Length: 331
Image 1 (cartoon, rainbow, N blue to C red):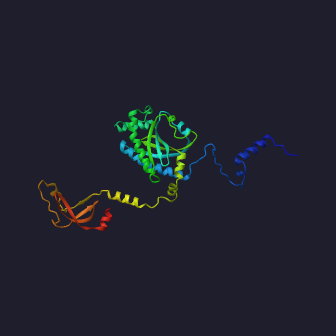
Image 2 (image 1 turned 90 degrees about the vertical axis):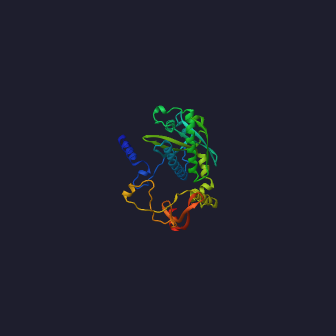
Image 3 (image 1 turned 60 degrees about the horizontal axis):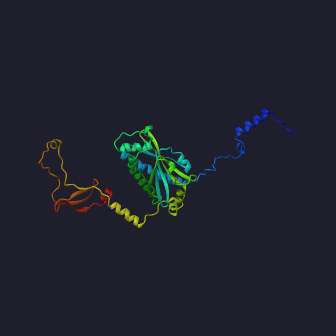
């Protein structure tokens, strides 16, 4: 005859099972299991290579755009990558409280649309600083921006669009165009509401004030981008060897770079007393002769020797000797 358990014995048995974690995982010597929650309604679609790509791209963007804002506002602006999340487009729209500040970016190759979203307080602060004001992040500044502020801010967003193209250029030739501005997120529909999007959140820190700037990319556009053969090759094997056209372009860019070059007529030594007593018309006797070779410096390093003279109405120096090793070190 089976034994009937009392209520106390049942409670003690249930508490023991709960303490052990339940099932075979809690039995001593049994295999340990790690349970991970998975939402079948919102599956995680972002792969590791896509995540690394977005992290590298927007970390570079944060650094470059932060330097631009620091120069324009004449104060330290720090922009850091905060998070990369996958949401439904409807969830992204609902997360923005109107009035907002949203710019629609048209993307090419592959075609698509993205959204750059900034808080109105940050926009108003930037405009005030550009006009010489003190700037404020107070709650009262969270108002719809005016038409004048919108036009002034449009130039800043154009620079952000250019910086975005530059950081994407390491992977692909991305072209972005600012098509329109909206303050109400419900008036923007870049993808259907049920489609997933990738939201890249950047934290903008100015003194002790922190605010967010978000990029919203359709996941369909991102997946199509990563699936392109050229992008796959770059992600797996890195950048390929430069083509002859690229080498010629780099060579032309290097040749166009300027560097300071100057010649030394000679040197002399004076005491402090003689230096203090110098007046207009005094002559300084140098340690070099008129027809003697003078030193020519490139970035404070002697790279040539030459004879100083004139050509037409200009002073000139004729190069007589190239110091190859010093020249390479100078360059």
